[in-house]
Image 1 (cartoon, rainbow, N blue to C red):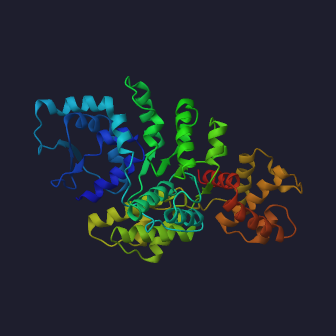
Image 2 (cartoon, one colour; image 1 turned 30 degrees about the vertical axis):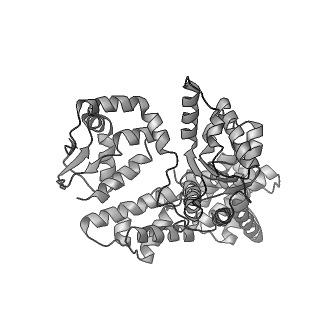
Image 3 (cartoon, one colour; image 1 turned 120 degrees about the vertical axis):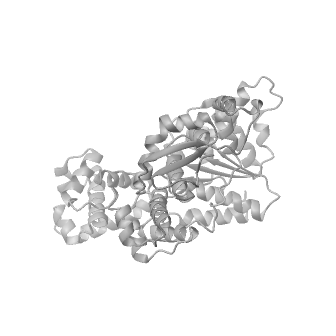
Amino acid sequence: MNQVLWQTVLGEIEVSVSKAAFAAWFKETELNNDSTDEELIIGVKNIFTKQQLETKFDGQIRQILAKNSVHPRSIVYKINSDKKPSRSHDPVVNDFRSAKSITTNTQEQAENKFNPKYTLDSFVVGSNNDLAYTVAQAIVEKPGERYNPMFVYGSVGLGKTHLIQAIGSELQKQKPELNVHYTTTEAFIGKFMSYLRSKNKRDNFSDRYKNIDVLIMDDIQFIAGKETTEEAFFHIFNYLHQNNKQILISSDKPPKRISSLTDRLRSRLEWGMAIDIHMPDFETRCAILQSKALQAGFELEPDTIEFIASNIKTNVRELEGALNQLLAFCEMRGISPDKQIAEGIIGNVSRARPKHLTPKQIVSKVAYHFNVDVNDILSPKRDRNIMIPRQIAMYLMRSELHTSFPSIARELGRKDHTTAIHSVEKITKAIKLDYTIRENVADIREKLYV
């Protein structure tokens, strides 16, 4: 047994629990060197962590281990004995204190901490993110002069945090005189709440940000509806922007679709460059897998990479998770990863195209999603609320089933297959330019495989 296995477990747990829970119970754990296939020994920092893992997380840990083909007879959570704390540093007392202050601790950890893996060199560029990457390079060259603010949006796990942190890291490296400040929105809110609760307010909260040259704010959507915090951020934004300081912001949706956001803050967020990062295409997914594998010290055969890329179609995070499962499995057994092993471990996961999917099912799912009648989609009607679903149905038949254009035309009751060609081309372009169309297509595609 080695640490690769436990890092795989931690990686999956980190995305399934809160940041506070992960920092409190998992961050300082490790796989003991005395572990065997029959008995896993997990080193923990104190009795408090030991009890939590035994009572609350043991089942989840076993489930992740089973996914990686590891089935230990027992898991022992053992307190590391290399440190002997004094009474004033009693682990139980410390954990009781940290339980009260864990939010503050994670807020501090979430500020000004760039992941060393998140660099511009390691950011794999494809048709889904090439504009964002080009703008990032321009900002590194001349921060505050163009594309200010830079607002990056898209679904989870597509590389938004990677890109904005990479810009910050590159600016620190190339222009060390700049004061680059990174924070998650949750950490910003927590910091502001602490300021409001403090009795000795010797300064204005916004003054703390006036010496910043580059402000990087992750997941701005969480500020919506928090009027007092929005007000504070609004004044910080105004001051920095008026003084030509670079502002970088990420979100899961564009400003106009963030509900409960005040109009004046929304307008500020739309001032600069709003860029969408969407799901990577097949070629980009292959490039990402190849890059990640090389970083881990593995060189995968093309057919292995293509198999994983064909089966994981949602986001980069899930793609990397599947790759990590494969590499951990092979490293623990001292074997080289290949397509056959990948098929056994990953299998035709839920994102793969099921054999039973038919054109009629696609039409039915599209009709249900848009709340229109199937017969209307098959009819000659040219109303916009009918035409868009019809074109999306054609696009999905082509992209998911690789149906020929004449067959698509027949399925939709069209006489001329050029209509199908036009529809597929139109939706293909719209996905790159229209956030609403892209989200609708992504939602329907998910439902096809449920």
